[in-house]
Image 1 (cartoon, helix red, strand yellow):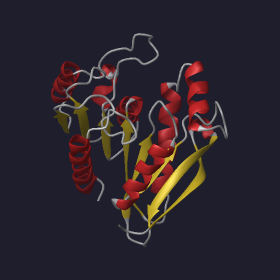
Image 2: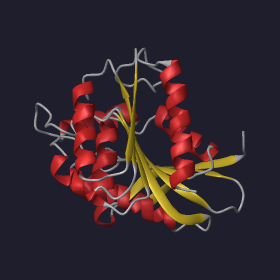
Image 3: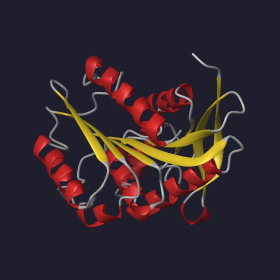
Length: 242
């Protein structure tokens, strides 16, 4: 494993707000791409920070903005997530501003090669697609993001179908065939729409895997799907962020 550094920092998010973020970087002066990691609904937690460090091990500078910082600065992940959900979650425009600020931070590092991508899990998967349709990015990874092609039952998350023509970069999608958010028909609908718009994408769906199959600390974890998914991510980033 390569040497890396990790620390909590402050970045400028939407509207110039100062928000907490977690940064991990490989050691060394080599030029490299950057990855913005969007955390899942449970929040800016230990599992997400492990993912940020994994991207550093893959050779990227990586940062995860704390999307719930405004609702509960300094609170633990569970309390902050509860506070954010009580207020209806993260507004889409604020999400775009926070991811844009994180990408700008990565591109401003002395090791940046000028390229930045985004990845999200669960709710973050939808938000990764939203960011890639709203910002100039170089790669995007959607890990089982629900409500991309349909509205959520509570209308808190609206379909991104009208935004898909603006997708700015190649998209990698990783899904479980036993998932219902998104279901296999929704994944196929998304693929059909991306083809119609002439977008570059690749989707992989795994047998025996449901929602959150990457989550090593949950019963939903599926080792074969997760290992292959990480291999797909590493290859994708090597092609689009190097």
